[in-house]
Length: 193
Length: 183
Image 1: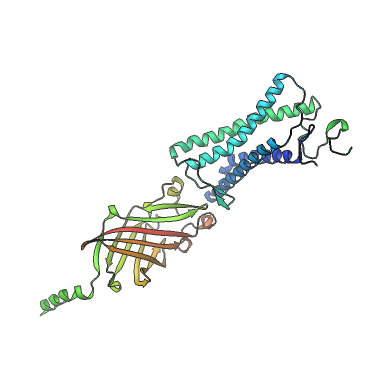
Image 2: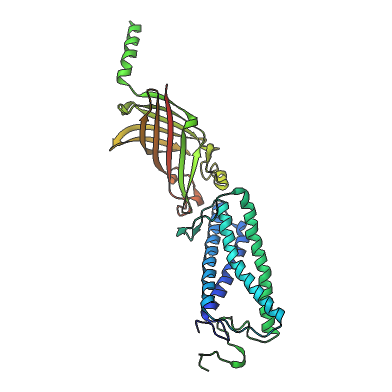
């Protein structure tokens, strides 16, 4: 297990950020869409509070991830046509943007709705905007549709990763999978053969 | 003879039971509450209440507050809270439309006057003490500033699921600013 990324594969830190954020944001989005299954108003209050806490955690993680990405190196891009490389970069940039925008839009929605924002009952965060109930319905829409858009872009991301893995037989997926070995029995620089 | 006795009594009364009777000027008075929800303070106001106030800082023994609050008039400005408060789990205004506070005793604590009394809310009566600051403005007007705390669960406010004090704080601060005009 190497912490930093190298030419051939992502390091443990990048993998940790990638998969933790992936699970947290998809889980948290699904959770929010199911919030009306709560058995009582208080349970719904607690579920929404949990949703906000997880969302704030995602925001902190993605900011750390972007910082780490600036300090870390990245594996080589796989060979591909110009449009494929362009599409890969566009999808990645959009995903980063959405992972930042989703929690921020939730924070903004919470602010204009005039609700408190608490992180796992430990401390409170300030409002990003003044209360404006007329805007809060719209803000909810922005927050939710950003999630649907994220799922759409995610489908392209996952589809491309699977295409690389299954059709091109390359390391694009393997180099991000935790515990996976790269193909060709190759080792990464710095690793013992 | 009877008439003379009444006259003497009428003359003597102001000397013994000297607390002034006041009427509240509602437009210039406010009854507020502050609580904690999810770690943040929220505040609300009771828009409809009435009070009978007899008060004399020099004659606390004959002073008295009697306050009746229409619970359905509570408003925090938050849509969810305002729709929950009148409900069965909180004020249960259908069963208990009013709360009632009446003083039993006044005493001094340093510079502050403490009004001890009984608060009846949601069918439960518990002793509650309020700090009182009285300021005479003229011969006929004065202000009262009042502050105290109630423990909401003593009265079953926020019962069942809502009794979780890590979400809704256990104590609620009550404050009032009252503009008085002597009768």
